[in-house]
Length: 601
Image 1 (cartoon, rainbow, N blue to C red):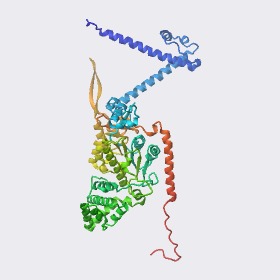
Image 2: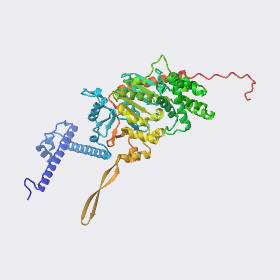
Image 3: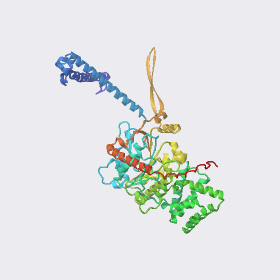
Image 4: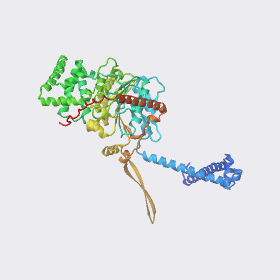
């Protein structure tokens, strides 16, 4: 006897069986109702569906198609039903397979509920806490709340990082670094922008748009975009202190040293000598050309005298000790120092860091307070201006830190620093250490590298590990072929339980059991084979997630920006052609040799 208010178990089964039969008949009748109407229409009798009722259902079962679709061919009606049923069934199966495939592919990764802090509502709340200027604003534009990362696969939502996050992105060439990260960040930035690159693609797409927001400064000493020189930067301005001079010397040393963590005697001594010379030139109001002259002639006592005049006696004695040392040692140190600043021997590069009364001076301390854009373009390899580029980038970010301290601790609006090709053209030796506090100052740094090993070659294993640990947002894109690194990432993502159903049969019947085993959420081969345009998101305190990047050319205003980019590319091509037309002076022709003159001596 059942308990009070209860119902026998068998009655539940009968109820659900009846409900299932009714639902199945309703679905089948709806498919036949629509399919028959479609068949009658394609046979020329128009779209005239019969009344959806039990009577129509009964007539359909009895085969009275002439009553339901008067004048239509029974063959056409049944053909429409069959065709409609096949198409609908195929669509349902494909949709089911797609949903199951997506669930299986993203099983173990973060879902939308895990990423609430990066979703629109969470990131808007965080932006109001970080930016006092947003107080009182009811509706915030999405770009005012954070930096766009992409859309959570497969169906969103849109994810953004906060203005105190610092980012490290690892992607192979042509995997979407420029189109999906660098260009969108520059276009969407609300404050000052700093961009380093060894190509002109980001510059061509973003320059016109940024020019409508603020002033555009283009530092292009090697003609990447063939931009005319319309500015100059006082390279020695920050060298008035020993710290500033040593930092600038370190940038030049890093530009020729493959691993800044490994410095032999000559590299270390060259950096000390450059530090003293930079300090003497800054305190003595000398030019970069004067500094190059001191390097060419170690016996020149001018830098020693300038250091003594500035009451920097210890530095003066150290420099004088280097000059008075053994000739072989002194020449080795000075030659190494000359190699570090060899790019300044190029008059085209030297002009950008030499005072010019006819051109405006770029002031990093003023740049970080506005909405201007600074493009730092340089080639990589021999003869590059990487040391100058790294010095200017570092000076600008340090100016941002000092401005943030004056503003109460954080820049508002925040500054965006996109260090594209950082391992080639922007080797800031202590960049891993800067990562630990730049975000808290309202300076959003995005470092783009081709691989983890590329960063390790520049900053060493310890430095790259420090940068990896300090980056609160990490994006891993397509084409990561470093087996050891991919294996570590796979372990970092973790494992999940996978169920296996086994059935055993015997003469007494069959039994079914379920067992569980641990598998990697993303095996190394799947990480390596990630398609272009997608990235693995590793955010501090959140489970890893798979996102889809948002390339600039798929955004609503892509047509207008694309037209501007085409005009900019045409202008770059025209400037390049003009330089080729001017060309270099022809080699002098040798005088004609009189007949009979011997040609071999």
